[in-house]
Amino acid sequence: MDFLLESLLASLDLILAMDREVYLTVWTSLYVSLIAIVFAALMGVPAGLAIGLGRFRGRRLVITLLNTLMALPTVVVGLVVYGFLSRQGPLGHMGLLFTPIAMVVGQIILATPIVAHYTLGAMSASDQRILPTALTLGASPTQGALQLLLEIRFGVMAAVVAGFGRVIAEVGVAMMLGGNIRSYTRTMTTAIALETSKGEFAFALALGIFLMSVALLVNLFLNLLQQR
Image 1 (cartoon, rainbow, N blue to C red):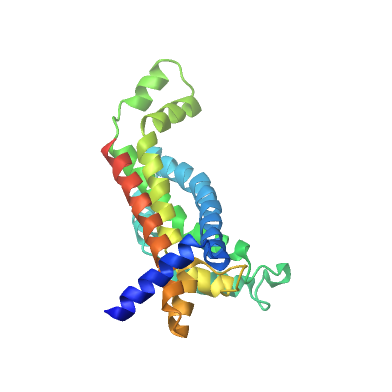
Image 2 (cartoon, rainbow, N blue to C red):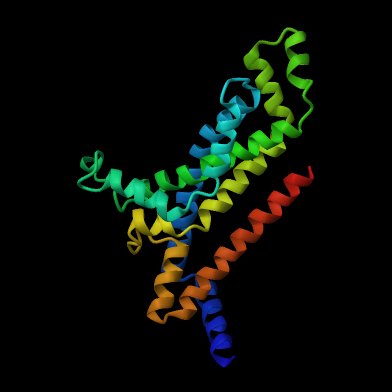
């Protein structure tokens, strides 16, 4: 018990002293995840709308595939992207492996199905008369889709928040594609794993406090959006 208390006090000292390495690691996690979720939203929201509005053959199969992709293991995503970006891979000449860009790519793959699924769910729960009414009033299909998107905006925001919560706490992609390079690609999750194995429990605990704080804020915001 004394060990835990001492580690907690030491971790709080690191946070209050604004330890450079702690805050740099937190910043790396945040900016990589924020960039990834922006691109995931740009792809996932239109995909969710297209699936929700479309009436095409194989639609049920596409929805099933989307549900499956939501449970993608992070290490599998990391493995596939690693294969593409490694020296022997088709994109190896770009030198992206073990860079923040590689981590962003992996996190986009993880977050996009989640954003699309939540957007599709928001559409299913919305008033089905919105789009036909807009078209009847003279709106173009694009304008009708935008009006529908406006009506389900809270559901879309919840989709984006859920996707962010998925990528900020993952470790497999960050470790395999970022390489856990100090002051460059080291995120909160990879640093926690490394520092704990090194016996630097206080440092890992400081990062854990930040990670739990981010997770708490994300979940509070998501619950607020779902209530709206």
